[in-house]
Image: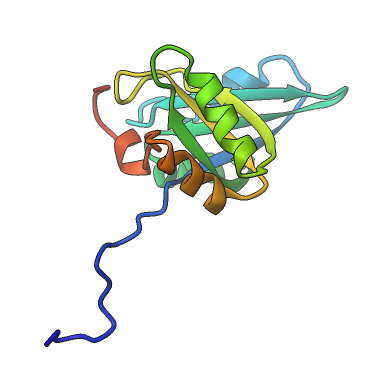
Length: 159
């Protein structure tokens, strides 16, 4: 008899990666100022996307240590919002077709996507924001696609 009747057979680790979205005024040197916030720290930016409007930009960042990155940006008075997305390794061959067709079968919309600029596991990876991250994770895993965890992005040398 089990010691705890509420134990599960296997645990479910959330595949969500935390993304930091930073608001920048459209001024010369703003992006440099943002990256200098990490100067002297061990934080590495492993994914980045920039959306520019007429008078501002939103810079989306995936860092190898989100907690430290958030602390550094907050200390430097950047306007930062934290959100979650999925990061999926792109398999060799027609990997993007596998990812998109999987999401299509689950009727999952992609809000936006961008590649990682570092390859923590040695393979290319795609950050994806969807309208249904839990369902997207299930669909992608059912197709034997690997979703990266924050631990795989973790601090330390690139793998």
